[in-house]
Structures are given as C-alpha cells and as structure tokens.
Length: 343
Image 1 (cartoon, rainbow, N blue to C red):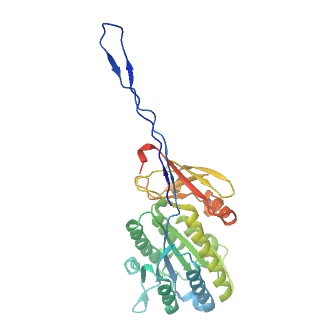
Image 2 (image 1 turned 45 degrees about the vertical axis):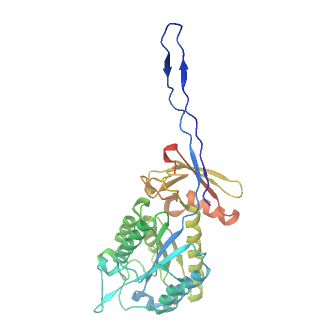
Image 3 (image 1 turned 180 degrees about the vertical axis):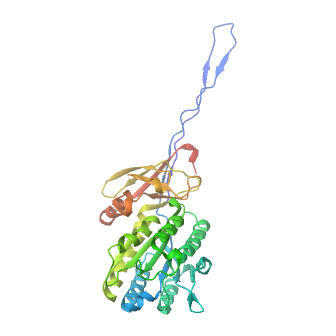
C-alpha cells in the first residue's frame, strides 16, 4: 500500500500601520519555505524477458542444457507471481545459416504475459541447434523488445535474463557476438538506468578459459545487471540455476521501487525490520552511482527509483540491503521530495 504524508505551511501576511495621518501600508511577506513531501515506495512489479541459448556448443554436454531448462521450470513453479514473463531464443537459422540480422530477433517467441505453462511447454520443445552463437544481435533484438515493454508499462522493473553456455573464443558467429561488442550492446540496452537491466546466467564448460568469468560478467556489469555461473551435471545445474533466478527475483523487489505519478524524490530512507536505517541521496543516473545513493529511470518523469549497485554488482547499497533482507525481512523505503513534486 502506498502511503502519502503532506505538510503545508499557511501563507503569512504582515500588516504594518503607519503613524497617524499616514496612509495605511500593507506588506505581503513571502510564503514560508515549502515543506517536504513523503511517500512510502512499494517494490516495483517486474517484467522479465528470458533469452535462451540453443547454440551448438551445448551438444558437448546435453545434460547441462537439460539442467538449465529444468532450473527455469522449477523457478516457474516456485516464483511469487509478481513477475510477468516473455521468452525467446537464439540462434535463429534460415536456409541452415545462422542469422546475424537484429530484425530477426526483434520479436519474442512468447510475449508478455506468458504463463508458467506457456514457458514450460516452449522450453520442452527447444532443442539444441547446429549453428554457433549469435548472442550479439540476439541481445540487441531483445533490447528492442524489452525497451518497448518498458515504455508501454512504466513503473515496472524490466530485465533481460540471458541463459547461456557461451564461452569467449569458442562459437561466435556474428561480428557483434565478439565479447567486447556484446558488452557494448548491453551498455546501450541499459542506457545508464533508462533501459532494461541485462543479467547473465552462465553455465561453465569442462575446460574454462581464465578470462571466461570476466568477459561474461562484463556483459552483466555493462548492462546494469548481475552475472552468476553454474556448473556440474544436470541436477547440479538445475538446482543452482533455480537459486540464481530466485535471488534475481528477490533482489529486484528489494532494490527497485515504484513511484507515484509526478513524485520526484530527492532522498530515500531505507528501514530494515532489524532497525537499521540508511539514508540515500539521488545520483544523476546509474553511471554516476557512488556510495549510498539511488537513481531514477527518467529524471524528468520518473516511474521507478533503484538503489545503486557496487562496482561489478558487489558491495553496493542494493547488495547490502538485499543481503540484510534475507535475514531480517523486506525493508520499508520512503521517498522525500520537495513540495513541487507533490503527486
């Protein structure tokens, strides 16, 4: 429930009477300084676009491909229901050739709101293809899909969740599937907090190159998201992927808050059930985050406020608040704005 508290100061007029025989003079004193407005901010509902990798690299360990599908299916059965889902995949092949055309990835196989049953049935029918990774254009296309959703449904947390075993130097097919280029695409999609977050759930191979976690993690960092790596056999992958997806769900609910229409907060107060209180100042945008701050999705007409993450998604106020919530429970977040921002 959103709660609003308003404080108003009455206008004051000062009447001054001159000595006898003088005309009466009346001065209007300026209004008292505007008082701040407060609003309790609920967790923003979430939209997720699942971007599933079906490239040929899975053929080396098909059990891991099945394990990732099992983990997603288990998450669907356990999720709270506050997330609306869409799902799509890459690569896409035409005449046995993998497409590198962004337009071929700009529509989702399952659009919002896909049901648990819709996604489960789609996953069951998605087999491993014979072509290499086309993650670059696929992510760019997913950005178009999720970005349009964000514009159409303001006040929500929007994310692309990449589910992949792609490894640097192995199976890139398109020019924009080079790893540095993919990070650049993720950065453009996120657009300093104005666009969707990009998360990566990466399945590690048998022989992992030393730069694998950093390069894959770099995609998530550039996209304002989180990277997690899972390994093992089918059951291990399934259990680990389930845990990662549940953490992403909980983290979004803690760190991204919906704003009342017209409310532009200058500061947030985050209060944990254990009594810990954290005061946050507003950063110019996600790229300017430093210390205990938050950013708005659109500084001119915001619909969400998000707690800042630390460098690489580690140690920021979002992460600290999320970890505390796992022990103490969900925090209360109250925004403070000037009177001109009164909803």
